[in-house]
Image (spheres, rainbow, N blue to C red):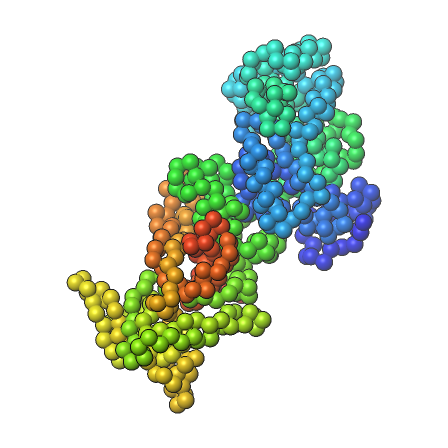
Length: 561
């Protein structure tokens, strides 16, 4: 095990570990964990915590476990456990062990009895609402329970009856006996156990009492030998309670230390599990893996590379103050990665027909197109070219606006990897919409250049009508129109963007698009990056566009892109 300084920039968390190792604390050992509660799906905010915990273990020669804090049987399910493990693997992380807080239920119960014997815990007969009211509030005194001074013997007997199922759900709880006047609300006699007759996904019906998160969390860290318990800032108020519990117990190893860091916030996004569940339950999205969701499963379906997410969270770094990061920065990391790795293909989203009037009847030519200009090893591909093509409707105007350089009557443009064509005429329907464009082509311009070296101002993409494959494409905009939904105290759902998804059917694509595999991302030339759906490869999701909006934001702010 090494105690050398890591190569990554030294933030306050790493500085703390370096100091601990230098002092010999924990014997120079570093052990972290990622401890999700299996009551939902991971989102990109979790990716930051995952990356930090695994990075610390790797940099300091330690270990990092995945531990499920599964103490609430009413909300937890094996489905979420499987999904979390799958998401972790997709991100590229392999835990040293997969552990469960439920494995420690017996030890946690034994420790609870020890607290009772020491006069540090008591059974309270009051209901949850009364207990909540008596805790008071900030600047308001708490009210001690009338059961707070029961003897240790009486409390122990009642607690054992709770375990044996002698009381109804909610009839009694076990509370720590700390300080009902503490300024820290977490120390006002928190609940340790509640009666809940619910089958647990692992222990089934073995227990009718379950530990609270606060009681199980720090003790689970201690049982496992965690040295550095890394949490987000909302747990800072819980740290005195974390330490108080551990201070009262005879631990099997060194007492772990909790350190908090800033969680990740993204513009145009909500991260709350409750809000994400509301999006799903109310039908605003198609599920937890909807490509508009910030869940890892949604980002995966949309085509975000795991490596880009890791690079993004590494770039943000570790801070002590919560902040919100522009989603355009995340998209910039995705775009940079895909620019290097994605194959290029041609697809026409909103097609109009082009007829080349001087093309030889029945002739089909193969033109050579570059698969990825950033990667010579990707080579080229033949693309069928014929006398009828599809082009984007926006690439032809009968009456062009100023500075419009694409196809219009009398103007010549280049077809990517193909020929020069000049528009001569067009057909329109009863509403004036162009249906067919008539062109001539220059036979000497194959490959996009001419012997006389003449230049054109525009290059457009196309698909051979005789060889096109039809595809369905989903285009995405921001799920929330407001960059900071709900920040002003309003309901964030009021900021939902009703136009966050547009579905196009009958998209025309070159035949090579039929060879993509599930989840593969390709660049539709001139249009953006698109991911083949994980279940139906005839459906594509726009991952990101080609324009680097983050670079534009940086320029407006006077910074560097």
